[in-house]
Image (cartoon, rainbow, N blue to C red; front, side):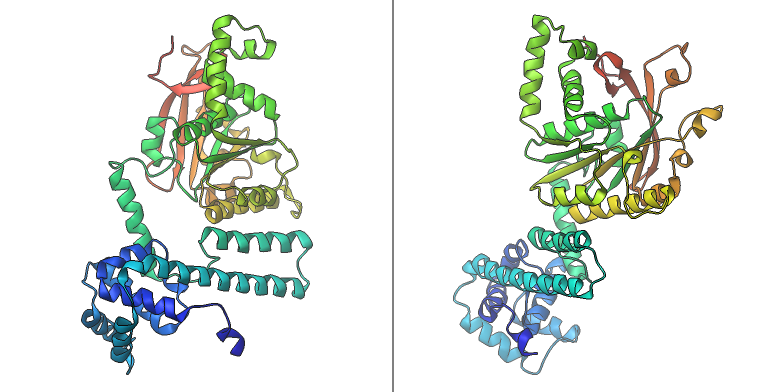
Length: 438
């Protein structure tokens, strides 16, 4: 008990935050930009801030009289609550310094979090059941959660959740009701899945050679060009970094990919290439072509990236899970770990995967969910599943050889759909069907 009392905290700063809100109720909005209920160490201040937050969410005025009444309704009033409130009003110098008071409270909360994380890490090592890599992964997760301020789990007061939801809703309203996620570069797809959303696991599936890498690169570039400050982590287990960059430049500059491979460029091609190089160089795309990477290693790399926007993994069937006894277990493990990574890092994870040969044996060869190889866990963990279909892949004499369909097979955010695309083979890229290029 003595050790708990020595954990870092500032009773004066906590009381000053509560006192500031009592002096000027509207100042709670400034505190909410910095603090959450659990940042308060003393029980009295934590209870009062929790009730104040509920009042703020309900649009109720906050002052000493209304707070005392709400404390009573919540069963949190103490015999000395009235005197405590009076003392806070007397001892708070000015509400105008609430941001400084809140920063002190938040800093002490972080120090407590570090101390608790260190104790948990030491306890995990002392148990002796984890390997060094597992212990390191656990330690990195705990430190990452502290650095990002998202916590490492536990029950969250619903008032805090509502406050975060209001903030998201206000951002959407300010953007004129735009899609909530990152842009894919395909307007119809964005309208269907609401963009690439935080914490979502998105699977992009097709038969080999249909162009899933090209479509993934399209999406990565759309995100990168929309906001160059966001980092896109692109893990390629099949192609080299140079091949990935060559594909991006071909699609961005609209230069025939064969010319890119041979270097037979005319002066106009060089001009377009220079513009594409300038555009892509100023984005936050980072590429790793280590073919032996595991999901855990990808996660560890991404935790160290500031302003991470999107993770792309190309592709699932080339990954390994060292602890799995068979392929089915390996896919289940990797699927679950990718979903955990998306939630922990609060970014969308776009994972490419191959469809089984089953689609080729049916009369209607459009992909369905069961075509996902080792599909059980993939279907369950994925928030969105996209399947690419091109008729010319199966029929060489089709009337429109470059017509393609992007089929939304699963959509946790809404309806499924069939989106018409066009494959542009000379640029190894996809466009929406109505797009035309000179």
